Length: 458
Image (cartoon, rainbow, N blue to C red; front, side, top):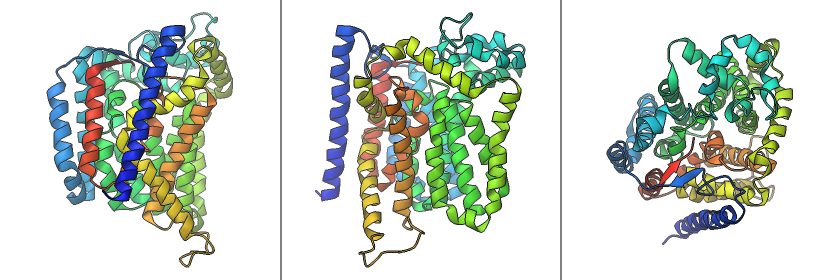
């Protein structure tokens, strides 16, 4: 067995041990102290083996992607690959969700007491609701918002209010919105890889983005929608820099502004954007005017919400207070700071653990090549010239964002959905792996086991 493959297996084995430890230690803590507030640590889930109407479709789709995905991704014209990837990802998310049936799998997800649809009738006057939004964040405040409404800036809630206004009432339409848009995130990531690294790596990453275990949660929460908006903000920035397009720059800025008003934690997407700016800095040097529409677009959503009476900073500080008033103040940081990473293994799969090992190796090779003592040293500011190094930088930026979120203590538990916007950017590390069908099989089996053995939350 080649040394590289053996090391990949070691990385996957270490990830398996991390998950095993998180399960065993978590069950002990929850059984003894009841401080984790999850039934099947480290996931917000409960044990319940079951089959459902989505089972045959999910199994057949997994077999088809494993058998034909890498070949099709390599051969299809680029313009055909993107819609095929989106369609397949959508089918994968839907089929997994329908293992739990239409009601529990999709229609009821956003209608529980914690969710956005609970407050639709309180937004009859949207400007008035925005002005008073911060008055209902704390638990002791009158008519306090449900957990997810209070835990996010109001652009998330306003989205579902507007869907209701145009006639798309109820959890079914809201769930379809999240799944359909969430599936486009894989396309945005592919577009970014092609622009910032190269097309060959994007094609190798495509089947892994389509068949991600994260699909279990992309069909279960509004975070799929948030992940798509954030991913397209990054993708449009990449296109703006490579094409030196003022229009793409403005659109990217607009989506970055919206991202920050969908979730406070998604401000960390700035780290991924910074990696794109580093890789595409020649575009800025060639056309510095790109920064004008980028920052102008970035200001649109914050300005609109501020003029409407919503104070982002005040709301964030109140949210921190509420977080520690509830389960967040009881859940032990010492467990979740590493068990959250086990959740990441479960949403990205063992293939990603192996891919991250190769990502680190690619960065080390780049560093060696850029060393002043290296005969191949570039000795210029234009680093990251190899496609592998450029992709490794993108993946590393996402990993850094995830680690910062972890260390902050504001993501104790439920990170299988909260970290979806970052986790999707780890999956391209799988492009470095040889034998893609074997790793895709591992990814598919993990997703199918999770959805058939557990009743996942959100």
